[in-house]
Image 1: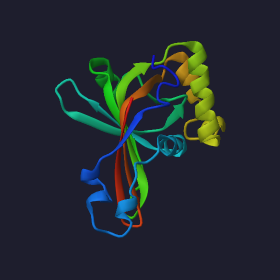
Image 2 (image 1 turned 90 degrees about the horizontal axis):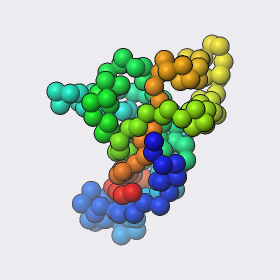
Image 3 (image 1 turned 30 degrees about the horizontal axis):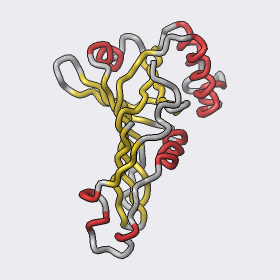
Image 4 (image 1 turned 60 degrees about the vertical axis):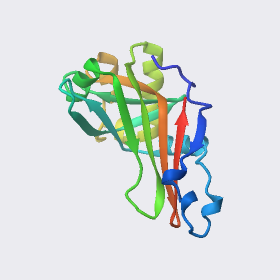
Length: 185
């Protein structure tokens, strides 16, 4: 299982090739890498992520999921017979992405790592609690879209995977200034 807290102190690097640092725009000289603390805040707040996995024949599979950032690990789930689960059984490398769809403002994030299935009951309960705290009535209310997901996790009707970042990328934009930050773990 990914080590909780392992993502706390990555090395941070601004990639000037894809940042406004090379541009002559006003403020370009002030371009700095995005702090990992800010990226973590966005990972905690984001409601929708896109998980990318690789099929056995090499083709990509990308699908939206709900996920929680908990103690330095990004957790998501899938049904045992869904394409994501079959792909991860073949190749556990994956990427989860989240962000906005606006050109002028926002921070898009990519977390790359190896998915590991959560099997420890205590950790599973922590992840369920994190889902309930984050998604609230979507999970806790009988009318919620994902009501019963905690029981599905406990019974194995939905598999829970944790991804501790190996590498993460942040693509920021504010007032026409763009940043490309790489975090290595």
